[in-house]
Length: 360
Image 1 (tube, rainbow, N blue to C red):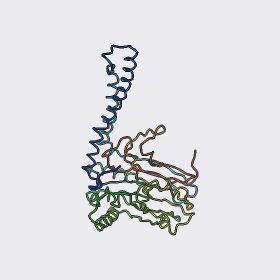
Image 2 (tube, rainbow, N blue to C red):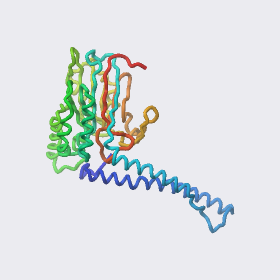
Image 3 (cartoon, rainbow, N blue to C red):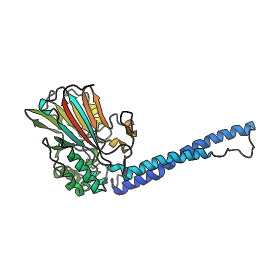
Image 4 (cartoon, rainbow, N blue to C red):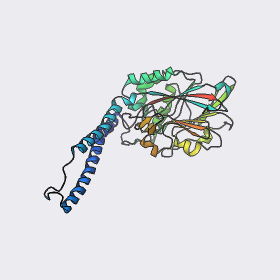
């Protein structure tokens, strides 16, 4: 998902990309089908010409009406899908519920619920009513803990200013609201006039989290207490195999023991794949985002789950496990690059922690 670095992501570039895909993707599919038929027509015409099967003045067989109709039908699929994604799909918020079992979960945290959101990308929003609806959905979950796993803006801190009052309405749960940074929060995808301008924007982005009542964790951890028990919540800055690496797991885990129950927030799921899942410190649950599920794919629960992004990220949407350690990759709250969603809907995740073994 790229855009013009000189301008940064904005509504104009979003809609430009949307119209480009809407116009040209169906044409590409139509062309591929018709060109494929033309290749066969040439082959058939060549054979018929030299074998004397047809009048030599009619080298190419006529294009078959059926193939043209099939081509138009196939081209209509991406056109209607992309149009739906732009008009309705991008705000078709879904609540995804998961229950995870851990034998060593402290007793007092049995039944604790976590609401996770990720990838807000506030600079892309264009419908206040839909965003307010999504915030209401978050509050309806009445979770014990609310976590936001990065990318509050596309590039500039000012993108979030019209939405602060809306996100400030997210309820304050008993265990608090915490957040981390994502790759877009560092202002890397923009040509700044000076380093000081970039630094100022970054400081303002960090300040946005305070303005919406989230505690931003910058390579640090906090202790969450419930009853006589406690768990560790750890937040790292962005660490990505393809993007900025400033996350410091060692620093973020200072004072955390191997036997502590841990929830880790790390924006990019490639961090889990490359450092976390086999780590000797045993990070029980990692919460990530970043991929958006490419905002395009097919999900039929229990049958099919596909997106082009799976060829880049091993963990790209939903829950993944490795020897009792989990990562959950949120599909994202907002949208970026393409101003819509097809098949991969914006997500509010609710995870319930249970003590014990998973019942198969």
